Amino acid sequence: MSSVHFNPGSDSKEVNGSVEKLEEAKVEIDDGKDKSAEPDTMYQHIRMTITPFVMSFGFRMFGVILIIVDIVLVIVDLSLMKRSRDVGNALETVSLIISLFFLTDVLLRVYVEGFKVYFSSRLNIIDACIVVITLVVTMIYTFSDLTGTSLIPRVVTFLRFLRIIILVRVFRLASQKKELEKVTRRMVSENKRRYQKDGFDLDLTYVTDRVIAMSFPSSGKQALYRNPIREVARFLDAKHEDHYRVYNLCSEKGYDPKFFHYRVERVFIDDHNVPSLEDMLKYTAGVREWMAADPNNIIAIHCKGGKGRTGTLVCTWLIDSDQFESAQDSLDYFGERRTDKSRSSKFQGVETPSQSRYVGYYEVMKTKFNRQLPPEQSLKIKSIRINSIAGVGKGNGSENHFPPLCSRCG
Image (tube, rainbow, N blue to C red; front, side, top):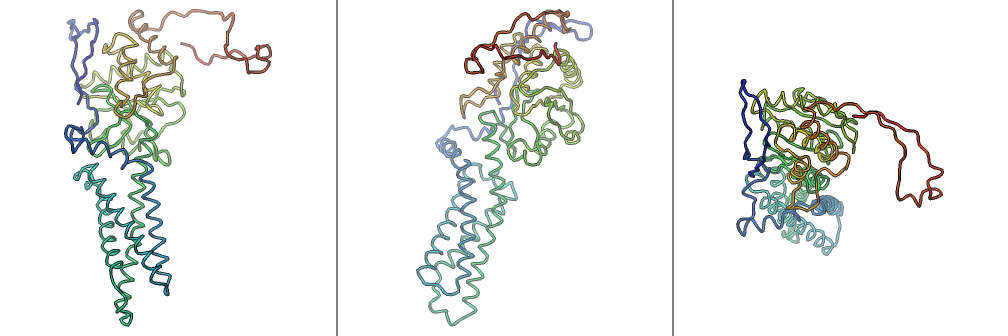
């Protein structure tokens, strides 16, 4: 948990006919990180140091390759009915080394994730059992001397049967696939603050205690690198059952609202673009009504990456709800909350100039126009200046032309 102070400003609100002054508030916000993972001790410091390596894409991919190599070695070993002792020893030694690597991999993951968290997954339990059993079988097969048993077919058959058991490692690919998906999602989300506790690992951030910013809840192939929609639904049902509303800001795609019990609102915004001022007013009016209905109600807002369009409407609500007076302060705050500086200093807030500008427009609509659209003004474009086109066409812009197009204004 992190404590966040915000100044609601000098606005007042009317409650049951009386005017109540909004005071500075202190809010506890869930950072989505397990407190036990914070490096307060040497044990935890080492754990935090090796976690990026153990959970890296390269390390996980290397494990998948070794599983395939080991299965191929077993098949080759079983297919060579007549082989030299040196070849047999080489195959068995390589297989044993791979088995020891798999055991080390499991132990490192238990160390990094914690015993309770790791073994809370049935897939991890099965994976660990496969690793231990196949290691024991490999050791028996490797260190057994078949010289004196050549005349005992049953013994040879039994040992070769043990060797076949190692092929069960193919089922480890299922757990490795799951780990690769996790790593890929972390790579795509870069250093956006993630929710990584209570069995969840999602590109999802509590901006305030009642506002969540996240990336697109996906299904199919896109779920390999973005938030799986079922996991997002599980999270919201577990943390805010019957008290959440999802806002989808993507004009380009949607999903079945039944995942979120049909509590999904759409605000159609093109990628890297802005909503109309009218849509911003409708959005804040809807959020005000939802938030006022129950103090436990929250909103979860997303676009594709949970950054530009999401940040625009999150900051709009922060201004509308008097949590910030200044558009710039709200934008700075969103960027601070969305960025996980423990991973990288790369800014994960609103960066598109027009999006930041429209947050400023909403500030003006709220403070100067009482949440109403400003009066219409007719403007005439007299000239357009485009800089840095020396490498385009003749370099002077004389042959360039375009028809004026305005799909929506205001």
